[in-house]
Length: 163
Image (cartoon, rainbow, N blue to C red; front, side):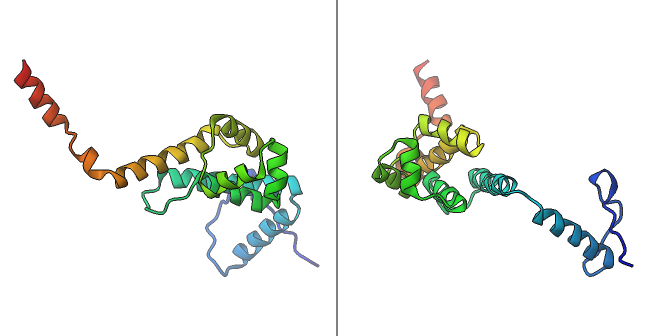
């Protein structure tokens, strides 16, 4: 007779499980079975949530790799298996304008940020913050000397001389 696998009560693991143990294997089986039972809508929501977390991680990352908001949009469309032309038509955009947005040649405006937020269940400000981070980094690296001349100590010193 096959042994019935009981799920942990209150959705919490109560015992430590090491990889390779029967308990771990049983737990993996439970997770796999639950994963297989997900609806397409649940899978889509999980995929979008994963991309949202990647966007949030990018914002707090100090890595020098630049990823435009358009690249995240491309990932979303690819994940959802939506063609760019179809998406552009849905939004009322020219396909060439969407292409430029995805390639980073154009920025996402506030109106599109609100639309993307609604469509993908993301905070619209997330799209704007990614663009702002990239633009600030671009300016800082392109014109480092211009900004390095500003100093609070110099400002205070000049103020004291004037007084």
